[in-house]
Length: 157
Image (spheres, one colour):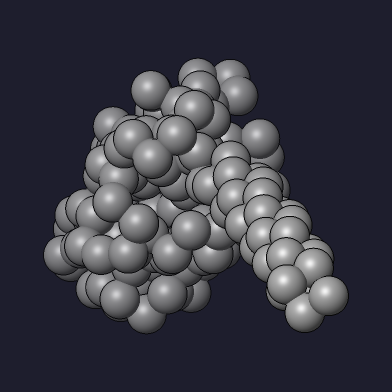
């Protein structure tokens, strides 16, 4: 009888371990699915900068106080489908970057004092859009920029 009870316990313990391992494997697969395929770029990441509606965007610097100083960053697309940030990198030099994370296409990424951060996977980018940490990925896409000091505008695209 003691042998019978021990065999029953062993079978029950074996089932419990099997169910636990199976459940953990299923949860792990579900979590990994949400993180893309593990490759740089992920399945949802664009392989180009999102197009600007109308082909170009004219930004009045007076409308974005953050761009009055070197190092300033502001989202300038007015909430469009192609989120874009302008960055003043020198007194007369600007650049524009896509605010779409190059890992899995999350948008818009956050503007931080030192650059950008994707809140979805934690990828971090400097002010010029270069990847600097967090989820491995590529640099943010840059748009062509023209600065008109007389008009106080930056034309993107």
